Image (cartoon, rainbow, N blue to C red; front, side, top):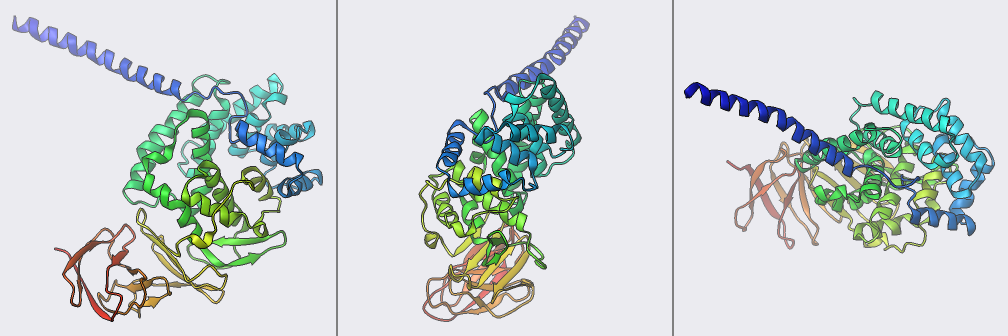
Length: 456
């Protein structure tokens, strides 16, 4: 009887061992089915509404269309020929532009993102043989880049998978499932919520492309898993520009702050930063941050006119979307998710600016940027809109704040609790963010002493 019971248990365990993988496999297949992109082409970025807007811009001979058309009709060498020619084909209907995009993709083209756009946007003019050949090239590109977990690489694989869905069995759906569930939900979101700076400023455009293609095809808003980060993102983006603009041959640029500044600014980086902001507005035009960004972007003085930027400017800009004046934006932004701080004295190009990001403290003034060491004690830095204290070595301060400016201590231990003693005030406790920034609540009518102690 005892032996018979063991056999029954063993049999049950064996059956469960066989059933469990089947259940898990079935769940994965069901999940992958829900991430099948079955809409007609184009599926990537060019929704029916956006395509209608772009074609209307062509009919109206808008400033942005005319600039893009001038470059394409003049056969200007485009840094991203697949993207530019395929976009021009979709808006103008030029078969020549479409064929040039296809020839590039089937020939020397190696950029997976652009290959995906050509496959998706030029599908109508691809022969069956061309479609199969380009599909195979996209599948190889997905496989060859699998070890690259950067946001730009993941974005490109996702675009390729969405374009391929329905053309190849299994591969596209598995890749989409991998990106949405394992990479985004399993890796990136937990890292964001834990304060790890896994999304650098230069990743913003690629991230926005990823968000757009997921929402447009699967009705999923990936922002919902990290709402604080995405709520703060537009103002972090806005305040993290150096105040002075950079005049270039084609147009002026606003230059985003960069670690270890030096040398000539990267104008492609500046162009993609502007494109990222346009794509944020396009993603959620009603968000307060998007409305301020739109006011910031509507100044045509900064319109991208060069061969790299013009296609992005034309594709994402919506000049009919109203915006709010960026003069209504705060001049102080603290990003508590990653521990970053940005301060401007005003919105003039001659403004003083301070940025603390990626562990680096920068000060921009009189047209030059300097890197400061937040661990070296110094006098309080008053920018008129915020007071900055340096607390790594000295944790005793004298602070005099005339207005209602916030006071921050930088250079402290990240995620550390501190006891805060302020003259004639009750003992308080505060915690630094992942960047080691501590906000202080001090009286604004007199000079006071402040002492910090690590909380036991």
